Image 1 (cartoon, one colour):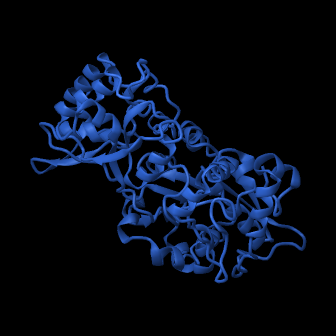
Image 2 (tube, rainbow, N blue to C red):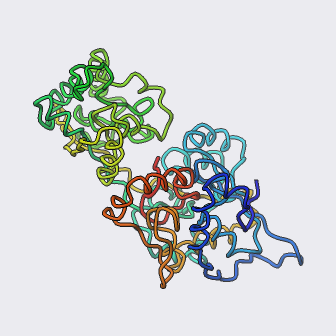
Image 3 (tube, rainbow, N blue to C red):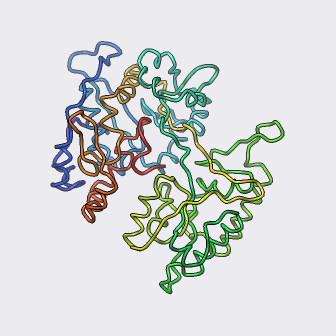
Length: 436
């Protein structure tokens, strides 16, 4: 689907409401003009076409009218961008088929550990190192040197860009008020952790007399549940990438270690006692925090930076709720969280007609004038304040959000679809939005 360089009134009214959309448009400043982006001269009146596959936006319509898409289209009038946004869950299902069939976007979102090895085996992506040296100096300037290592094959770089934000962000969050009501402390060991999960499920921690609480909602085939696996000296690795560690001087995969059986046995025991939410294996990807934030589950493994947000959400249903953080539970194999590094990338397939332009487009997002507009939290002019006199987006403070009360909740609801990676997932910036 091709996206267009202006918003339609029908789209705007449907998605955001008249008042919010007016504020949103008022916040949109004229984007900085890009540098020359031509690979070669095009016939008069003809536009180049570049497709972008990404996981931004809760829907195609939300992605189309996001500020990131607007500023992109406005700044490259000689390019027709084809928006191939997909949901995170759909991406995981579709990417192996896309690789096998060669049906990749000109700028293709992917995972360095899961996807690029398959792409290299199928010989469907190009080398990018020389293109980055010539057209990607802004990308290179801000990307950590270590980020590039996972996409070097036979001495050749094959990624256009890696996520530059830090994914070593994980912690355990608990309902502090539930622990207090049960007379329990934050668990330190794997045995204590199991007892807390059982108590959250079976001992009525919210005191309402109903059997309606659970210890934890797992993340769809334990894709992200490394916190308690590390207690047994193993981990599944986020996105089931697997986890490797040094053992007796050798680098070995955790999946085939005896501790994996022990971890799964422990999980089975807690499951049998009702400690895990029954939807744990079927929950859609991207919704692992829902039960915790809805006041149904008492524990979640998620980002430490989301503690205040989680407490705010839970208090809409439980006004006295508190959220506290705790360490990974310790067991016979130690303790720990999984740090992902920089796995998220864009690559360019061999079918792309304008690879130089593809690199220039991503590099343009890394220029200071554009980065200042897109990397802060919130949808421009709705859940943030829009752009200031310097052209920088400005966030609301926690105190300002709290003072808005129901108005803030309404703002979030109005733009919840756009808030999924702000409509266009990019490697630049903070985590932002709803994360994978």
